[in-house]
Amino acid sequence: MNLEQILFLDIETVAGTKNYDDLPERMQALWSKKSAFLNNPEELTAGELYERAGIYAEFGKIVSIGLGYFKRDGEVLQLRIKDISMHDEKALLEEFKALLDGPFNQKTLKLCAHNGREFDFPYIARRMIVNGIALPDCLNMAGKKPWEIGHIDTMDYWKFGDYKNFTSLDLLAAILDVPTSKDDIDGSQVNGVYYEHNDLERIGHYCKKDVAVMARVFLKLIQADPIDEDQIVIL
Image (cartoon, rainbow, N blue to C red; front, side, top):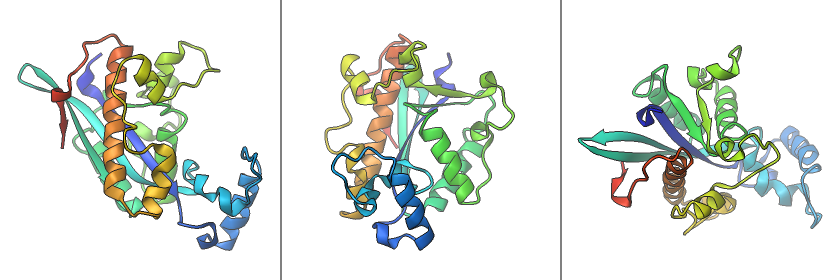
């Protein structure tokens, strides 16, 4: 496997509006129906459950995409990482698409994410449709056979065909002795960091750390040589 043909990515999402009451009336009614099926042992109201809306592409939005790719600097293999973080989701997705249509536009490109098939890839595609952005080829799966879709999912690697199993990236990193990205915030806190603290930079920083963890986990999963901290370059 050519590591330089893989684009590692991770997305951070939040609810589409700060509060449930900020939603249009039609969307409030639809969220009320959706939230009625959520696990809710504390019997919270639809408004109280709205902070979870970010995990659903119909009710959330993307505020950060972390990207990583391997590149050789002479004899040294580097993992280069950057983020696209914006309040304007459409502008964020247009910039991401420009990268896929430009520097990363190659038929051999593979997108890699943890649980990407279930979350990151469809979420990005759905939000592009919502924002009226044409899907790049690597995200447009219509009419393609499974082996024609260039997606890699680190969770699939760990499943070994066991479709009942879910393993978090943090757990995989722990058992594979990869440093954690959860030393500041975790995914459950992103909505609060965004809406309560307005700290998009902090979210982007966390997103980049997740990408680094995922890429290092991937190397472990394919039993390739690991990389050291000094081989990770933040752009």
